[in-house]
Image (cartoon, rainbow, N blue to C red; front, side, top):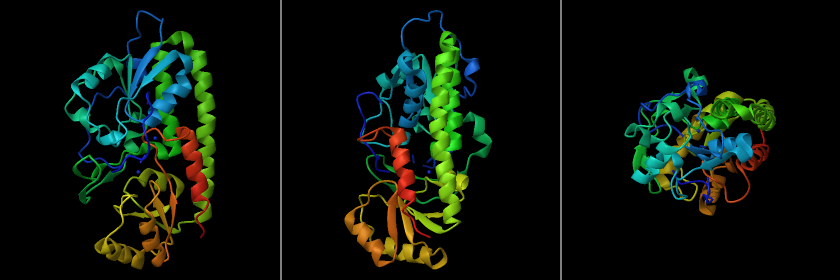
Amino acid sequence: MKPLSLLSTVFVGALLASCTPEQKAPDSSKSSEMTPPASTHGRIVVYVANYPLAYFAERIGGPEVEVKFPAPPDVDPAFWEPSESEVEAFQSADIILLNGASYSHWLDTVTLPDSKTVNTSASFSDKFIVVKDAVTHSHGGEGEHSHSGTVFTTWIDFDQAIQQADAVREALQTFRPGQVELFALNFDQLKADLLALDMAMKSEGKRLAGQPLVVSHPIYQYWARRYGLNVQSVLWEPDTVPDESQIEAFKKILATHPAKWMVWEGAPAAAAVEKLRDLGVNGVVFDPSANVPEKGTWLDVMKANVQEIKKITP
């Protein structure tokens, strides 16, 4: 999948599904298992798997943290392969924040220290969604892969995002217990923002009342489940114009799933928009923001996403 935004010097969606079975990554699901350092001086060096976790860590940690996200701007973070030196940087971090749910496929072949690693989605692992028999395809520089396995765009269910942010807070306060109050205050402020997003999307789900929608990639499952949205997925890249075979397959979907709206993960090509309009289908964008946006923050992107969904008419 083509990355959705550009990466800033120091580094959120997605619903992506994993291209491999569940990984055997270190499962530090409880940050209480982490070993606090002997020293409490200096900024906490935090390495993260994606931009949503970077945003959460920066909001919660404030001046106490130095957040690192080394993935480049031209790949999706889920499919990025770090160099040997980048792996070593992860291993030497104070805290390593992983998304879990089979995100970060490089973890299949790399060992990270359990005492530093936090699986931020461990608290809802029993609610993971698994996709079987997905179509294999390729896009960008990520090579050929399929979207079978565990769906990993966890954070666009904003209730799950709150749980992931709470795992970040717990990890930080375990590492630096002298700043518990600061981390708790910052988390509460972030949680309020996430709750507002959650309430807004719940309202939109009720307004749309199960109206058929098509989404441009199989990355929206948690979002659809949380907010009661009736979606079917295709495999269309925003910057690629669908060919005739894709259009015919789309018509077959519409025959049983009469959608009038398509949800894109990024701004679609003008020619693709025209082809959909010929079928009576309009489009909006819901950007999972797995990578740093060109402008604004992860929260800004999510607020814009909600406003896009409000454009959908029953």
